[in-house]
Length: 267
Length: 162
Picture 1 (spheres, each protein chain N blue to C red):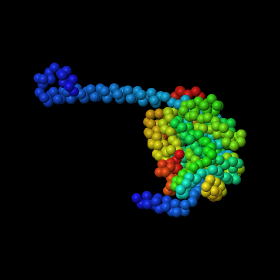
Picture 2: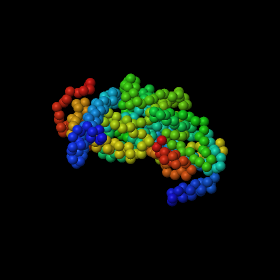
Picture 3: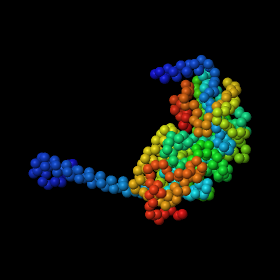
């Protein structure tokens, strides 16, 4: 303030109210300039965040490829665990099961996927049976050891094998017990866990779905990969067929045929 | 205030009984193929001296152990066998997911929702208590959050969610 006043040579000769206005507008211009600059910086930072997506490739039991951006529903909820896990995994899968019920029709926009950190014991058949006990739509995702390790690294999941409890086949794992929520752009937008109340977890997902619904309707056509996945549907259980398209206002590829953009992912 | 009086009344009634109790027990149906299970509940010790749960037994499992779960700064959960679970004088311990629990290792048959599981809890002072543990659905949460007059406030809040 003081410095602006001194730097105006005509200040002393100007009537008080003019002086006030001049100083005031100078200050306002200054604020505006700072504001615009900050706005641009924030926007640039935001754009960088949007561009970065998690790098992992996993496969469903039927061999369907799933990546951070290629997944059949609006939200992918990934959980790393093992079926011999006595405490954390059933507790977290139980939470997810209740959350799916809480979502009602929106549950069809959410895909819960269990990534086994114990492929030696968790066969596809065993995983299918195990997950069905929690929810008919839960699927398992797997891959080579490298692929599973890379996915764990992408989410900063830590796991390490522990000594057997009683007998040779009773080893377990210490592991990160969180659920990672990935949106269509391949970004991790939330983590969920048993520290949350059921209704709070439902609320988080519902709000994300509302935000995604709006974004998808107006700005993004589904990529060819997504269209392919949606057309194929989730084949985890017969109950999820035959309408793979989410029951929402989002553009379905069948209703809105779009020119196929060059896929950014390798097929 | 009314809540406080209720808690006090329940606490006094429990103290009147002056005997260690095992209640609000529960377990979950085992998913197909699951080899392990867990039993939860509330151990309440209204007596003037600490007691210890030193073992648990149940014929549905090849082995039964006392366990706890430790969570490190990175959110990594580690399950560990413990030699005993201390129940403080005029206090209680909640066995719950993500914390102390009774671990059923090597299930001989599946845990079926709606059935009851006889479990023997053995304490240093109170001796053996046989409890019929109700088995809930696979995705069940237990009743242990509801009432526990001698639990820490923190423990009560966290009883459902580890």
